[in-house]
Amino acid sequence: MSDKKVIIVGAGPGGLSAATILAHQGFDVTVLEKEEEVGGRNGPVSLGPYKFDTGPTFLMMKFILDEVFRLTGRNIDDYLECVLLDPMYRLQFDDREVICSPDHKAMQEEIDKKFPEEKGGQMDKFLSWEKNRFQKLMPALRRDYTSWTSLCSRELIRSLPYFGANRSLFDVLGNYFKEDKLKLSFTFQAKYLGMSPWECPGGFAIIPYVEHAYGIWHVMGGLFKICEAMAKIVREEGGQIYLNSPVKSLLIKDKKVGGVLLEDGNTLTGDYVIINADFAYAMENLMEKNTLPRYNSQKLAKMKYSCSIFMLYLGLDKLYDLDHHNIYFARDYKKNVDDIFKGNKLSQDFSIYVQNASVTDPNLAPEGHSAIYVLVPVSNNQSGIDWEKEKDPFRQRVLDKIKERTGIKDLEDHIVEEKIISPLEWEKDYNVYLGATFNLAHSMSQMLYFRPPNKFRKLKGLYLVGGGTHPGSGLPTIYQSALISTSLILKEQGIDIKSPLVWTPGQAQSLS
Image 1 (spheres, rainbow, N blue to C red):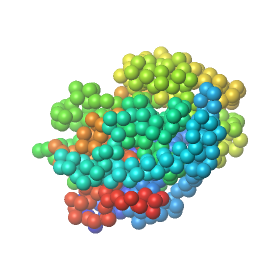
Image 2: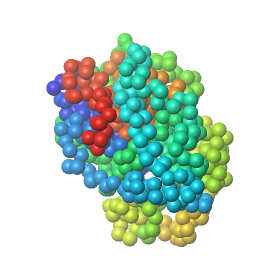
Image 3: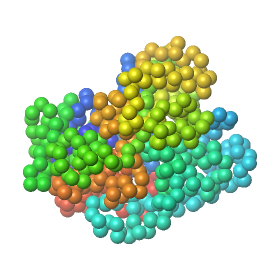
Image 4: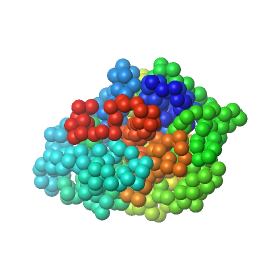
């Protein structure tokens, strides 16, 4: 047990994961959240009787989330009802659709049916080879990189040949598949990283691997229920969560962070401060300029950031026969991706993701109604796109695209509730730097030791969780960032919790 005080800025999935573990270990935990609900980008959007996830809708690598609950002395099943999805998602190209299943035999049969030009057995080869990569990379991804000595760690040295630094994700998938559209069926996941599959490092082939090896899950009531459950645990353990409590700045003296100043003028002091705000936003707004020269305004502007997303949340008085997850590829997907990452413009033909979770979950909309979540990857705000001008016309283009690609011709006749979040709102309302919703890009120059650290090297007592630190963006890695940061704090206090930094090849299977 510890009598140390911890202040956590932001009640997103990273901040709440850290809060649950530290509160369970006896730390005096206070979480400060600027919104009226917990969750951040993993929080809810409520429109009348309709409920939506703000951001993440795919829960992968559930065993990491299970581990967070285990480290609080709890079983996840006592707090959340998690459902394994089959099919995982439906992919729609211009000339065919691919129904992706966690059943490996069914998936191979789908490949044989939809891509007869391919030779059989690709799934077995993909799963076997990428399992090996996964087992080699995970020990490196689950440890901290707070010191340059980590670059000499056994875990990193053993993993280096598997990072695929000199090959793109698209190229690596060519080891298994010949047809470009089949490769795209296993590389669109680069969007979780906010990157192009033609530029994303090849080691991230472990993302489609973990989807097919461990499945994709839905949390009944919405994935935002995860953060609500974590908040419940924090309170059960005696921790405090203050909503509507935005932080103005960190309190720093002699290179030591000793607390925070709130927007209302009050101050809170503590032994540790954990930032769960957007990384670049925090560097720009929560401390005096040049406190950390490595992350001053000029250097932040030169870092590489992910794409953004245009969001539509639609409450409909009709339930449509669409799968839970549906992805519609632009007819020229490569051009669409280049427009986003290189051209900084809105594509004439774009890709679109439509979630129809109401077919699985009756808790999100009234009976016979549906809560439709629509996501379109677009350039971040470095593009100069005028979203005040473009928002409404682009909304209509998105609705027209849904009607065209899904065959739902009467969509607009059934809209009861609606909300738009464009890159402009991501930046202004959600404090996301440049509206880059997937945070820093995952190029090799911004990973591991070269990504902002879980424990700041130049400011004592300051830690970081979330997509802007190691290991990166996406729910599983955000949970992992919290496991790493809390482990460092606990280690400093001499507390042994059977460190989650240790990874053995069989661990993922046993945890799942």
